[in-house]
Image (cartoon, rainbow, N blue to C red; front, side, top):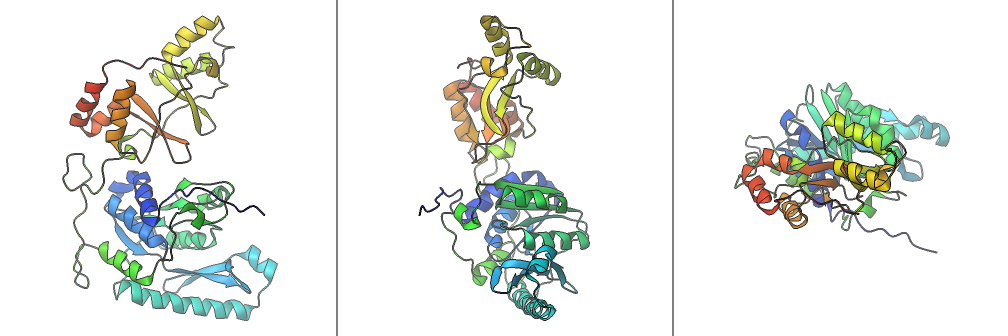
Length: 386
């Protein structure tokens, strides 16, 4: 029997949190509260909170396991006054556990929540949720049953905006959770999806001690048990306190209009005219397969002797695309621009799906110094190629 194997997407939870944090930069100025699901979601949440300069707390929730199959969720209990319980009615109807079983398991999970509350928060009250942007983080999602009850509880608690953020999850699970959150950010949706742990090279169990340490390192800016939260990290290009080098995700343009290989050359030209741009990414679904410029449409369509209405984009586009990853350092992308004499580069995620485009203009808005460095190496527009 063949064993399923897949190259891990992340080194560990810290690596996943680092990447996830950069994917959430648009929320940096909303004073967000990062709520992590213990225990595995806490190391991920710590990285997200540090990158966003946000507070970190735990979302205390416990799954109510099915009889004989504890990994299968009958529902979940979320900490609160009183605790909130949500049952997965489809599973309950299928398995028909006794009311006594559900009641007993619910009591056990509430006791575990109380234990963890005392252990993790060390007497601190939970951070305020009402009227805030809440980013709910875990190390991954499988069925989504536990996540769903937490999202609903945050709504009931008066959160202004709820964002679900995870490194990996099945696509169908994410789709089923979209109505529960205002935004959903997921770095990877591998198919087929077998288990969260397969996305990580190292997926050791997170200990209670690691959770306590993470919460202490991201505590509010007051003295708590002898720990003082360090000041928020300055991520500006010239800051000497930047924790990480500037990444492409910091500066790229995210909302990119694309064309399909099967679109007509005329349609591509119309879009360029409407947007006042000279180049468009060509995508098959979310995968980038080429780039087409106004020069391509003018020269190549003419050379082919075709009508722009009948000529397809794939006949005119350049298929040898230079792209970069969203979590690459800006400095390395500048080198690529200089080496290849190009002024804009498509940006892809680790599944090679297009997520944005980065140009010298994007770089210039963040750092004139960096832009000057790039311009020194890029003296001419790129030549189209096949």
